[in-house]
Image (cartoon, rainbow, N blue to C red; front, side, top):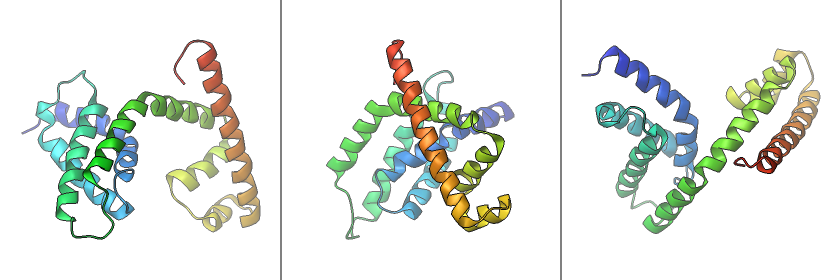
Length: 179
């Protein structure tokens, strides 16, 4: 049985890593619905075994290992399906993602920093689209613009964010940091 401190620590750590774990699963499964199921199962396993996790160590690495084994278990259950990645492919993808983790984390943090620099209206539009998954039409209605105007604004925002992320990563590399 977990105490309230364990519960709080688990929720905090899972919240910090949930998006990355979802993306990790998506690279190894062909369907988003399968990824959702696998991640849900993995969260249950993580919670059951959270007592085995050593506080202060790398939760992301521990969680990815749990997710990896859930992907393998899922694949065994679905082996009769037509579209199924080989075990070797899944292993190679997992290795590649581990190697790229630091780079991807740096890009994610840089993107978050760039989004924070947007004006509040643009932050709202980005949040509605990419965090809330809202349609262009519903965003247009929410912000009082036409759908065409929202498409154009999102296009400009994406270009701006792309430039911001690349500029910041180049600056970090020039200063001897990680890109």
